Amino acid sequence: MIHPSLDVLVSKVDSKYTLVVLAAKRAREIMSGDQAMAESKSNKAVTVALEEVAQSKVAFERTKTGIK
Image (spheres, rainbow, N blue to C red):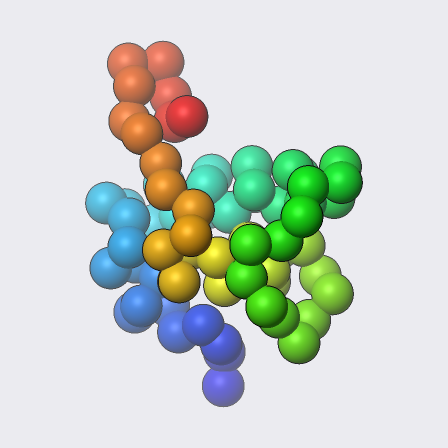
C-alpha cells in the first residue's frame, strides 16, 4: 500500500498537478540540503516531500505565473 495515501494527498491541494509540482519543488529543496520537516522511514526526497504535504507542513500559493 502506498503511504501517504493518494486520497489524503489530493485533499491537501487543489489538483493532482499542483501536488506533483509542490512535491517536486520540495524534493529538490531537500536534496539541496534543507532539513526535512516530517519524520520518515524513507530516505528518498520525494517520499519525504509527499509525507510533508500529507501532514500539512508544506503549503502552496497560487500565483499568475505558477506556484510559490
